[in-house]
Length: 185
Image 1 (cartoon, rainbow, N blue to C red):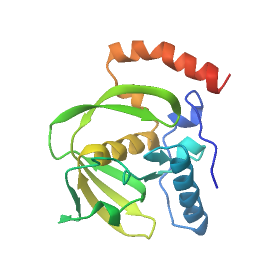
Image 2 (cartoon, one colour):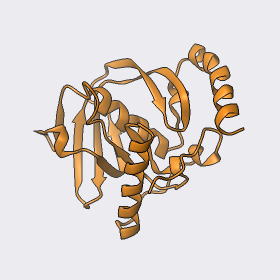
Image 3 (cartoon, rainbow, N blue to C red):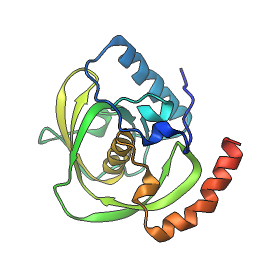
């Protein structure tokens, strides 16, 4: 079932979400709804707070991207992207093994038609619990790295606009107001 996506301005997007304590049939149904919602909105990621649910759960699917990453390791072993998409994870812990950062144009389903240049670490190492109960450590770069970082930020009340430069923030004010008038007004 496609769920309604919460727009910027809704206080749920600024909440620090609660960790997921256990995997239930309701969480599995939520995951299916979130994947359907993300695909229907042409997104590559969706976090539970974006549909109004304050838990540390997110989905990512970059399988349709032209160059989603240059490498993917799961528990230290080389892995194939198609074996891991869509990625459904909870209670993420991120670290950044390299200091290199890059700028990429990002969007967010909670900000329709708003995009901005965001500087983030190129490589992420993510400790994740999967929907099947396994704990894994994923290391990757590119769009997959960025999507994991972006969705994890949502789980802690951080939005992509928070990670932009002051000049970009200023330039976004009018775009965000226009978005708000169009979608929420």
